[in-house]
Length: 574
Image 1 (cartoon, one colour):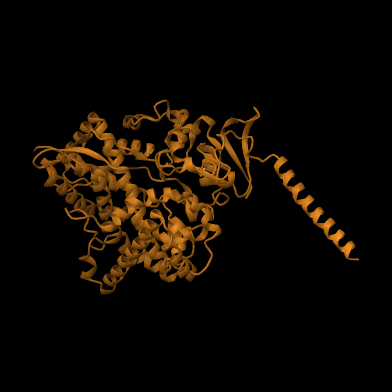
Image 2 (image 1 turned 90 degrees about the vertical axis):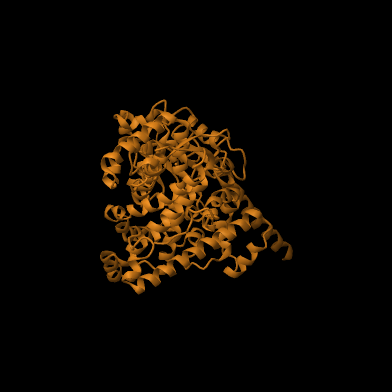
């Protein structure tokens, strides 16, 4: 009997093994829907193309993907098939037409999100945010870390604070901050031209701009003293994330182990400089957000002059969220599930500060680097700004919008700046087997990477000069190929600010910040006037910028930033 039982168990085990092997072989032999798509060979069975896609020096690889077409098969963790998409018709389906199908994944929310998410540290730290996910533990349950109805609810509540009416009201704040920047730079070059790392000053300025106009809070970041710790944290966040991209991908499988206190204890004992740097960044962001919100609530509770005399004079975005009658009424009458919770309000602080600071400072750095490379463009823009201010003095929101060359420069810089479903294509793809592909069956769970860089630099759409910075392209009708592409972006036929439910809520705010600064810094002779276009305008009025003999390296990432921006700054005499 014992021998019979043993034989039976052996037979059953053999059958089970046979079934497993058979299933594995069938799956391997079955052609995957994405296998016919062209793409580069995978360099690693473990990490696929992740190292190349997320490298700060990955420019050549990203440019090379364009050789495979507008929808390219890449490989992710454990060689998982993924799609790299620049095709405008496919982007329209992903972002607009079928955005519910192509909802951002939990993985995206946890560890990608334009590489701004520091989940690998935050999840383990157990930061005391109420909403529990990797990105939420860094930024809380804000716009960067919410999906579906939660995301739509937050946008509905926040949209009024980003209206044109409120943005026009905070323009004077932009001037005040920009004057401080102009004075700080002037103190360095009043005797002679100097080489200045403008990247550092743009980060300081962007942080102070969003602090005063967004939160009614001053980081006191534009004097000769050391910069606010938050400024340094922002500069270090993305480089630190890039060092931890592989652990971030593995983290969801281990992040539920133990309590938050246990996970924090584990992180504190990991012998990694990047991990410990990340821990400090997360703690700083969390503590700063809470301090700002606490101070804001105390001012709002006192009311009256306390509100109007605070930084920003009560016109900042956070004050609007707390005091605007329409928003207050909506929030008080809304169902509990539709209101912004305390955790979500805290989250908006981190989201607003980080997103606005890093993107604005990076864009300003790019613009001034390009202006230094093209002195004729810089002189032409300076002339436009000065002429406008001589005629009209302080330029209001509408006047700034009517400076065509300034607008063209901003547009051109932003252009160069990133269920089973059927994904249509605008141009037939030649498959690996030589056949034509006119639509792609995308298996459920496939990760798609929307390539802003690829879409904004497509030569077949933008022309052979797509990689070149040419502001004049915006001063005449765009090529018909651009108009026919029908990109789903919300701004100027490009994907820089995305579109649909994931469109950047503050894109008008971002435009205004850049225009203000560019206008303000160009003419020392007109310093008695307030400036309208915060950073760009101010600096170009008072100073001239030229290249130094040092190399400027731009790092590829969710936000493309320079390691440093050493420019020679010269004072323009009256």
